[in-house]
Image 1 (spheres, one colour):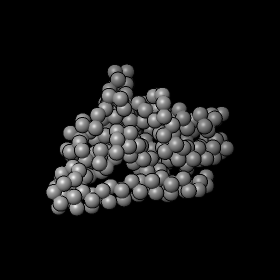
Image 2 (spheres, helix red, strand yellow):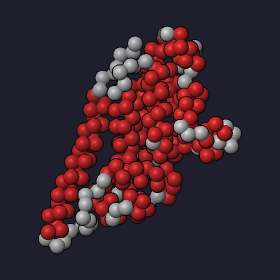
Image 3 (cartoon, one colour):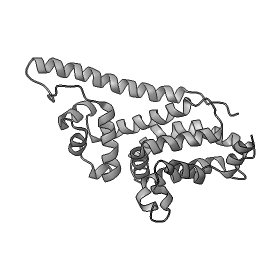
Image 4 (cartoon, rainbow, N blue to C red):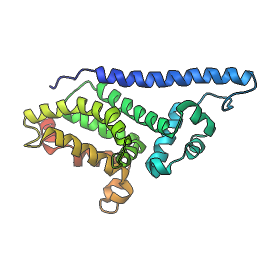
Length: 238
């Protein structure tokens, strides 16, 4: 099977997330101290739930885009004070980057937890992850079509780590004759794009392919459509 690539890049991602959460924890401590003195930033009886905040942010960014999204709407959806977001993330850009970092760690952690590094389980795991978190797929699908610096950040923080992990496995499958003459790099990008766009546009796709309206069968239909038949036949033959 394919060898798992070095995890240095994943360690960088983990460190980035850890540093961000440490900063939030330190800010929470400072906030509590300032409350005792009767002054300071956002007043709240509880520390912010970063999972709730970033889930809300991913949904708002995916629905309205970066320019159309507001931290006020994210705060309302997450049920927190809008000043809390500015205090912990600094700006809308900082909140957006936190969403990207969280998605990156979730995807890479899922891939690294797989006991089998064959291509089929890797592709199935990615499909399952984004079906479990459709807001992440919608977020990526929207942001990758934009111009400017944000797609570059998305590429560096999310695209590059996943690429480094998955493409060597795709290349090994190609060498094993499981992908026909498909180019491993192009296969990676067409699979990724088809997956995120289909999930993001599920309501539209349903008009032409009613099977996507079925839950929980939606992910099974995606697997049959996106995973090469050669891989299916190979696994079945075993």
